[in-house]
Structures are given as structure tokens and as C-alpha cells.
Image 1 (spheres, rainbow, N blue to C red):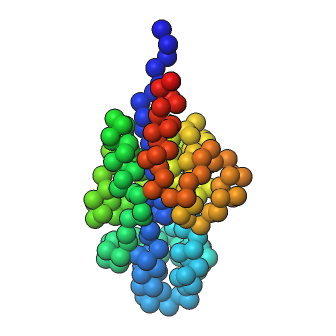
Image 2: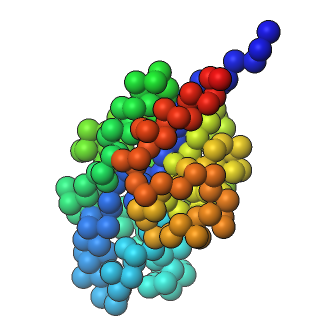
Image 3: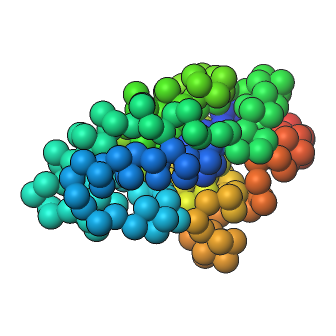
Length: 210
């Protein structure tokens, strides 16, 4: 008896993969700077989204202050970041395409999980699972738990997470990492945006079934 392919389960990163979180995150940092008096280059901040919040805050605050500032940032986030943040082109269609193929979807992100859920609810994007507070190789914990066969992200950290989980790494160039950087990190597939994902999925699932 031939082995049947495992069920299609596709994971997605959130920031700059499913959503363009730059406008909202910039607003939070502006509010944080106004409260604390810190001189934060918000344009620089939003040009390199992906790693955990604490890593970015360490560029603008003394190490001893970072935990408290991170808590304040997360508290400010719902008021400033949710409404200005749009879905990226193809985000909803990508989720729907996987469902149409009988697959499951999960979002695995470094973002604070309650705030990730607020973004997705606001935009009407409904994955089967949302897992937050996971970055790079740590993402493999959720990807393995839910038997993800593919992980889609925009950052080299997402590529590393996919590879650590034994999932196919699909990278999109909608975030801070360019195609050569993603390829060097080990991405298996590189797409310009999620608008190209449904067509790729049909080819991928046909190959798996053959």
C-alpha cells in the first residue's frame, strides 16, 4: 500500500506576510516616544520588522528598561496599531485557497499573541490556529505541533523556522528581506507576494498527490 501524503497544513507569518503592520507599529512607537522622551527613528524601526519586540527596543532604551517598555508598548498597541493596519494583497485569498483544497491554516508569529488575534479579527482573516511569541527556530514548535507541511514568511527567520520544523519554506518578498537573502537562508520557493500563492498551491498539491 502506497503512503498517502500528509494532510495539507500551511503556516503563515503575520507581519509583512499577511498584514502590512508598518503604519500601525509606527503609530505605537510614536506614542511610546512621546510618553518616554526617547528619540526613536520610527521609519528605521518599521523597515526591519520581524524579530521580537525586545530586540528592537534594545536599540532605543537601556537594557534594564526594556521589559517595562515592552509591556507598555503591548498595552498601547490595540489603541494605535490595529485600525491603520491593512491586509497585504492576496492574504485572504491565500487562506481561502488552502481551505478550498481541504487544508488547514495557522499563523505563527513573534508578535504578542493577543495583539496578533486582534489584527486577524479586525481584518476578517480566520486561520484555524494562531500561535504568538515565537521567533525563528522557535516557530518550529508550533509548526511541528500542528504538522505544518508548508510555512510562508517574509523574513530569513521564517525560513529558519520552516527548516527547523522540516516544512517547505515559501518566502514572499513583501518584507525587509530581498530574494537573494531569502534564497541564501534556504527558502525552497520565493514568490513576489501572496497573490501568487493559490496558483503555486495547486501545482504543489498536484505534485504531492501524484
